[in-house]
Structures are given as structure tokens and as C-alpha cells.
Amino acid sequence: MGGLAARLPLDRRPTARRNPALVRFFVFYFRRFFVRHMNAMRLARWGRLGLTAGEGPVVVYSNHPAWWDGAVYVLGADTFLPHHESYAPIDAAMMAKYGFFGRIGAYGVDLESAAGAAHFLAASADILSKPNRAIWLAAQGRFSDVRERPVGLKAGIARLPELNPDALFVPLAIEYGFWEERGGEAFLAFGAPIRGADLLALDRPARRTRLEAALTGTLDHLSEDVRSRDPARFETVLSGEAGVGGIYDTWKRLRARARGERFDPSHGGRP
View (cartoon, rainbow, N blue to C red):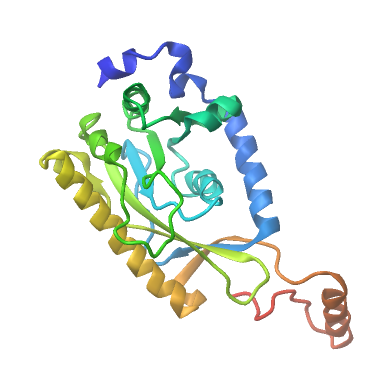
């Protein structure tokens, strides 16, 4: 593991480039952005991530349904793994265009070339060399509908257990939908962690099959809860701005004041 990471010059290692102050700024930015444009981030009650500060390193691998996934990673890392340094691979072309992403834990990936795959493994080895670190990985490597089966994980994820057998692999299901409010809902659920050592007992194709099965099961369970439209099945992690705004909300506010009631901009009442 150390040999792989050593292949990278120090200034190209994700752990050397990450700037904690800039990470905090982007958490603040994305939180404000999320609450302005979405109604809520909800976590399935059965899908909590029960890891402690000393457990890890961690590989959180998810499906990739929408543009919002990047914001979910930033906010999810701060909320669910606050004691871990979090990193995420992104497309190498995007990384070249927006180099400052490296200051918040991103590292470029080009899995279509042998050199790109080698760089991904070396950078990931650098990250997974310490227990207080985490990688958030869009493991399909492309945008994909949440209902697509098989989920089709990229082959590279099966190599990661070789970098550190102590790593924990955690499936994360992500789904978006609209309920009663103007803004969308982001639904999340974590599956049970899988030990890297257990994955190493399998050959690479079998590892990928097991990781896919764990993510598929988590996705299917989450979709059942989303279809129920029952907010009681979820914990609200982050609440956005409810209501329509403009004349409609002004009229509702005045009516509530005339009745001596508290104004609630949401359509059906906050759960």
C-alpha cells in the first residue's frame, strides 16, 4: 500500500492538497445552496451509518442518479463522518478545469487508460493509509437511473480492498423525488459495512458481485420507503425552504395572522 502511494509526487497526493478551512467553507456553501433549492435531505431510519471516529478507513460507494450527488457527498461527509477526512474521485477532465476541487478532497480519475487507473489506485492508497479517512465514490462511474438493474459498478472498486484489508466498504443508496413541496427531496440510506478482509477472500469479479448485491439491496429497500411517501420512515437531516413564495405565501401569511395562527409555508405541514 505504501509503495503505491509513494509513486505520487507529494504535491499530487490528495491528502497533501486537502485544505480543512476550504472544506469547511464549501460545506457552508453547499448547505446554503441545498436549503435554497431542495425541500429536504432525508435518511431512512433503518439506514443509519453507525461508525465511530476510530473505525476505518471507509469507502462509501453509491449509485449515481443526479448532479446533486456531489452536494450530497459534501454534506453527508460532514454529517455522517465528521471525524474522518473525506475525499472523492471525480472525472479527470473536470479536475483539470477546476483544480481547486483538489483543495476540498477531490482527485482526478481517468479509468479509460492504464495510466489513469494506476493514478486512481495510487491516490486511493494514499487516502486509505490512515483509519480516519474516507472515500466517497460514485461507483457506477456514470449517471444512471435509480431503477437500472444491474447497477453495473466499475471494475476498479474491486481493487480497493487490496489497498487496505482494514477498510470498511459501505453501500449508500441515493434517490431523489418530489412529494408535497415545490422543492425536491434527497433520500439516503446506508447499508451494512463490508470488511475489506472479507472481500479479499474473493477473487475480483466475485468482490464486485458482492458489492453490487449490497448496493442493490439497499437501493431496493430505500425505494420502498420513498414510494410510501411516509415521512415517518425517515429522519430529516436537512430542511430546505418550503412554500411557493410570492403572492401565494403572502396571502397565507396574512390569513394565518388574522386567525392568530403560526404561519407555515409548507404545503402539507412539516413532518
